[in-house]
Amino acid sequence: MNIPRSNNPRVVIIGGGFGGISLAQKLRKQEVQVVLLDKNNYHTFQPLLYQVSTGGLEPDSIAYPLRKVLIGYDNFFFRLAEVTEILPNKQLLKTTIGEISYDYLVVATGSETNFFGNTELEQHAMAMKSIPQSLNLRSLILENFEQALLTDEYHERDALMNFVIVGGGPTGVELAGALAEIKKGILPKDYPDLDTRRAQINLVQGGDRLLDAMSEKASEKAEKFLEDLGVQVWKNVRVTGYDGKTVRTKTDLVFETATLIWAAGVKGATIKGLDAKELIAGGNRLSVNEFNQVIGFPNIFAIGDIACMQSEEAPRGHPMMAQPAIQQGRKLGENLVRLINGKSLEPFIYKDKGSMATVGRNKAVCDLKNIRFQGVFAWFVWMFVHLFFLIGFRNRVVVFVNWVYNYIRFDREARLIIRPFKRNYDQFRD
Ligand SMILES: Cc1cc2nc3c(=O)[nH]c(=O)nc-3n(C[C@H](O)[C@H](O)[C@H](O)COP(=O)(O)OP(=O)(O)OC[C@H]3O[C@@H](n4cnc5c(N)ncnc54)[C@H](O)[C@@H]3O)c2cc1C
Image 1 (tube, rainbow, N blue to C red):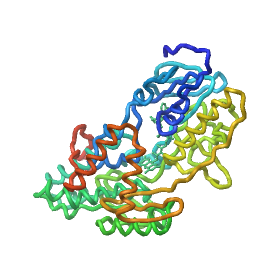
Image 2 (spheres, rainbow, N blue to C red):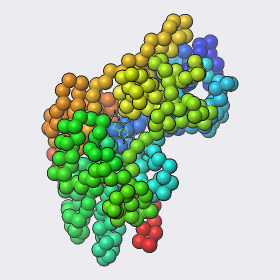
Image 3 (cartoon, protein in one colour):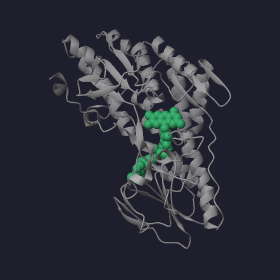
Image 4 (cartoon, rainbow, N blue to C red):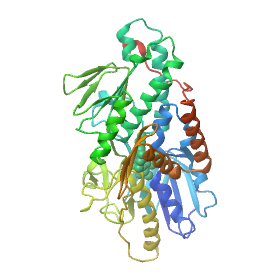
């Protein structure tokens, strides 16, 4: 990898997500050599992926070059590489560009879409966990309408304009709201020769309420907002399969659709060599102690989505969200310096700042620490918080300008099929 050995201990971080970046920033100016490895050369702001999928934002505005995050850092190296195996006994990593040794390893690989072993769903459903996947979805949504124009067959046209989203968490809710706004504000103008009133947005939730990690009030309000927008919400319905045409559920309910979007779960993105059964806790996450140390490996740490730190307050680990990743990254930065200086480690304590979700224009729900609110004010708070945490000044400005423009014009100008998603429509018809 052409990285010289220095006199300082080498900390290798796998993953430049929220956790990896926060840690790297903490290690700036410390007496360590930091090597950041990521399979992408950019950081992705995942909370806004749904806006890329629905043409509200360009992908560039939610991505940020990892090298730029670390400009001016001493003794810092970035390599574009996917780590394929961890050899803890040799303190070595195998990657797509060669091998590298470490003194301290931090796994910050985040999570990946969980299809719960259903290969049929994995093959046919659309996931939304990365920018390329969001661009695929954007293209598919638009291509479906272009196809719908070409057919006289009534059922086929309806299926092309039927969007089924599985998973009633923040991602599913936000995506459903955005699609409903497109149906209302954009489709009638873009497709005057298509009866877009027949377009449907179905949100399917396995449990008995949406946003089940938030308060009941937030769930109720979000459902009401969605229904006002024309989204059909199905609760207590479990999807069992999708062959690319028909969505089957555990009940008699079926959906004929060209688009199933899977937002029903994620699991830790483990790496070969550090994935033995005894290391894994709930959600395929690495079991860590209160210092983020992987159990049984004093010089290997895990932070963010991939880490499961079980405690009395969090028996299933912390939520797989940006805040735990950021806070763990910062705390581990401090702890690594303590460790290197021979001091004892301090436990991580999560400061829960609350959670929020937006349903659409002027509609959001916020559960903050001591206060819960919904509606227009919540929507402004949601926007402010997302702008604040977005990485890069340019990105903040671009996103802000886009939001203002979209708000005033009721528009989403990034509805472009730049990189077509090659769906086989013949197969869909068969
Ligand atoms: C659609 C969506 C919406 C979300 N909305 C919200 C929200 O509103 N609020 C909120 O708090 N959270 C939200 N989240 C969750 C939040 O994005 C994650 O909890 C957070 O990104 C976790 O940070 P992380 O650092 O653990 O991992 P990530 O940010 O996922 O970063 C992991 C990094 O590791 C890299 N990587 C993975 N495997 C390898 C490998 N083998 N080799 C090299 N590099 C690798 C990846 O390329 C990536 O850059 C959302 C997630 C999604 C998918």
